[in-house]
Length: 121
Image (cartoon, rainbow, N blue to C red; front, side, top):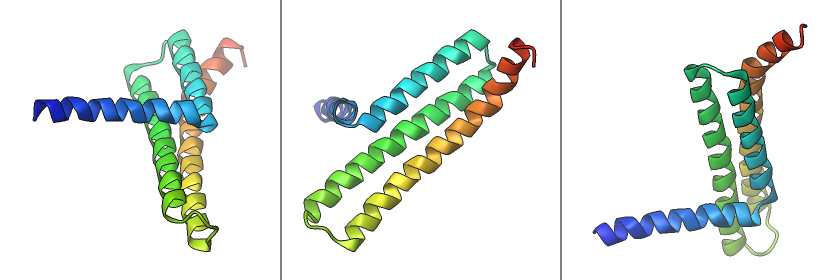
């Protein structure tokens, strides 16, 4: 049983590597996450704000991973163009966009007032 648990972590890490290795949008989200972490450190945000930023990063990257896996599965079961396959893929991509917009809103709510204060505005 322990070997299976350890192997499952290996599969998960391989999936994460596949995600960042094959998906440009995942790499873009990762860069945005790194920038948010750097800005959070620079602006010395609170624990609660760190928690919100961490949740947003996890949500966006998870949504991107779910989208990627749904697209791969859809391509496997429906290699030809079909309306339902298009709808599934577009809806999953839309979900990523919604989560990313929510995360951007949280980032603006946390970072913008602090930056405006620094800039004297």
